[in-house]
Length: 107
Image (tube, rainbow, N blue to C red):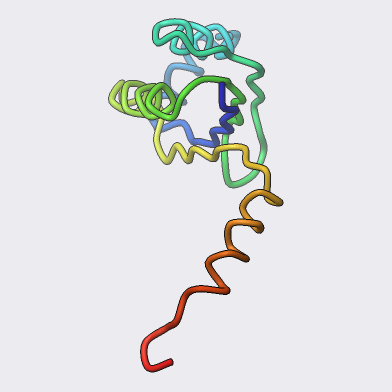
């Protein structure tokens, strides 16, 4: 399973929900979303800064995308950015092979 990192924001509707229920445990909601598609929630963290939350989960990209689509469609979340964990050295090895063979326009 791949590991994904999601950063996102609450909408005004989401913040309104917190005002109604300030003890709302959003990690449980994240768990429900992950479980619904067979992904594994690793952690949920609230943030101060440009993003309101950070979620780590394991699964497929399709599962990650489905979580993004469904939770943003709820109207409570927005700006969810999904990043996938990679091995940068493996990427560099592939890039080195391409760099030896690839010729840009006019070269």
